[in-house]
Image (cartoon, rainbow, N blue to C red; front, side):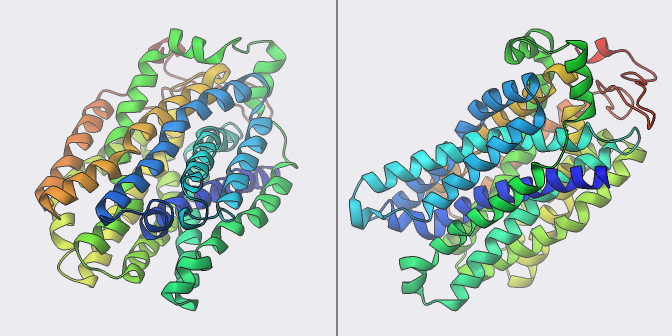
Length: 442
């Protein structure tokens, strides 16, 4: 029951964080571009709106340093409580914001400020949620435990897109743009109360507790991790860039791409996104469980190869029909990317020792996220110049994926070479690896 509660605590916060974060992504192309960044040229409005979307990604490394320091010095639990409040509170306030028509330039300025707070909070949430699960796992099931908080992404996005779809179906276009879009943001406050209540009842992770009792905590984690684990920081960044760009497209920009360049309806685009995310709810725990038997590296490598092979066919197929749009979206996002993402939390966390794991895991991941977060601005410019070109968009994705593929081929198999100190049921420390010492990853 204790471990089940830990998994629930890691999952529920992750759901809410990603619900809030992707709620903004969905609203960017559908609402914010016209209500907060009006311009006579719709393409300019979308470009500016996605610049604020990217600003949230750019703020995430700041959050990783702030909350990583807290998580490595004070504890994972304390850090995660604050990320929830920062994320949920900013989303709730977005739902109350007056528009550009009501208060002028102050409206987009406030929106950008709240988006930055969102990004900072999310910069600390993801890594902490992963560690809450993986550092509480017994040896041999870490891959499955690490996949559970990853479920927050599809569950949060399904919840967010479903709320938009539901409100859209119950209101006219005028009503939706006037007040309907606010309801999903305001609902965040209910979710945050539930998550804080659940997380307040859990204990600190065993591995952090051991480090704290041993007095083996880094004084300044961000300095320590760059001094001793800089190679793994850069390795993590490169590993995340390839699938990260494609992920941002598949889970956010696809709404603009399909409605602006391919003339799909908003409801059709939202349905395709929702179906693919629903598929991930099945894919992620299954692959996480499988990774404990065949290893994270094999799955990660296979996923990248599949994404490279499907990149151009994806962009060629989705303009043809709704059926192909749904099929390719489900296959690429729900199955292939879902498989890669299922392993990332565990794989990346196994690169770092416990005393700087929160900082190292969060910082590397969020620097990559900050880079890929500006993908929509690039794609908006590409779409304006070349339209929905399969080779332009597919080629862009392949370039990043090849970089990640090269890096994973030279990465260690962290299922057997790990920085974790595995604890058995009796609490004894087994060691970092039965086959390799810590130095192979430093």
